[in-house]
Image: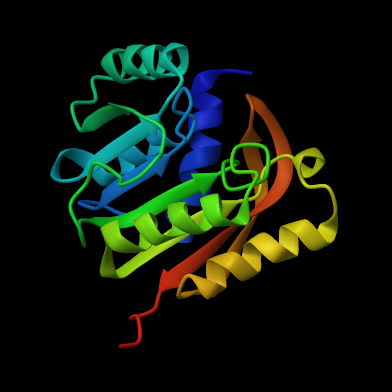
Length: 188
């Protein structure tokens, strides 16, 4: 299947979920850019996408794809998350958490909560998270997926909408849903 066709599918779901011109986006665990590249095209030259991953091979592929597409609004960040995200507070409009917020990458609930805390910190007050659970096999049970969704809500996000359809996952197409969680203002 062609990369252009994949990009059109990703672009459709991103637009439906609220990605638009001029936004600043963090693609956390971006891989080779299946969503970062279409997002960069949607947001245009007025926006920025910060593509964060710790896999240098994937980031090299993303860099190559961005150059081939003539995209100058992609900023690559080679990092994992051990502490603070390398972005200022209240800076981004949206964060993509596609197939990263699960027990395979973050086995401890406290690790996922640390990620969510940082995501909350870098989001603008009216910002949102797009979450795609990813591999069902990384969840030991349906209750584990529900627990992770609860962790997202406990981190002061609320489920605003779902965009379901064809999803790109590990360079394959599959049926799935992207959940849009909006940021609540933290109490006191």
